[in-house]
Amino acid sequence: MLEIDIPGYKLLQLEHLLLNYNGTLAFEGELLDGVDTALSRLADHMRIHILTGDTFGMARDEVAGFPCELYILPSHGQDNAKLHLSTATGR
Image 1 (cartoon, rainbow, N blue to C red):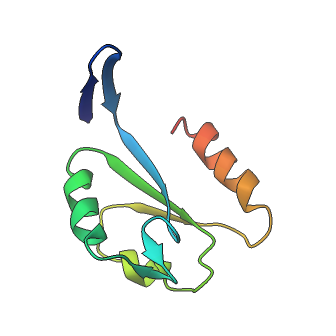
Image 2: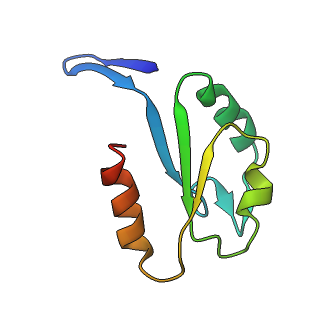
């Protein structure tokens, strides 16, 4: 768990991190510099979930070896699939 104390607000206790792949962690299917290190460090404290439509077909190979769960979404209705994954699992 990762704890972040926000002064004047509250202490956040984060167990899950839900990320979009392309445009957040990657550009044109390839992980951005430093993302591998950041994900590895965060994975020591929380579960990482990565959502992607895998437009470039590279996501599985790019995150291979990282402690994360990769969800490859169907080409249609990705917005609903992302919403379903984030709410149905409580993340």
